Length: 199
Image 1: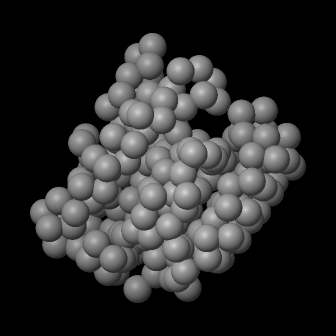
Image 2: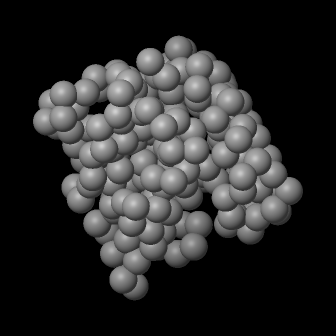
């Protein structure tokens, strides 16, 4: 997978997954707002939709290609194992951070495997309603969303939060008053949430 690794001074690595049409550079400033010291492993989606980079295919706005999502989820997890070995970082100290399409890929992992101790999902959707979630006891998740997000409506956010909590995850949910855009207040909330988790 196309990626960039930036060495930090902590054992924790933030794994960054951009939204549709983004690049591996997009979320680095956000990550540095959260911590100036963590390692950063930032990825670029290599599934193209009208020239825009994504991490998995979709059939239409809000209609995910579940077969491709499963394949790309497995590929993402395999990549993280390879990257941990290549860059000498701890796999169990990776904290994924995703926005929109990237957040949905992280959500797909959580719906299949208790693979992360902590995850940050900015404006995610429910990844796959056909799945029975694993036991997520011990996993902690930060979710942020917009009260008036036309892409990820509030009921979608509430459903995702409920399913993760029912599976045993500790979920912190934050709303801002806008739509699908990232706002500083959610970044500040994410910082307060993640700083105690950084080793």
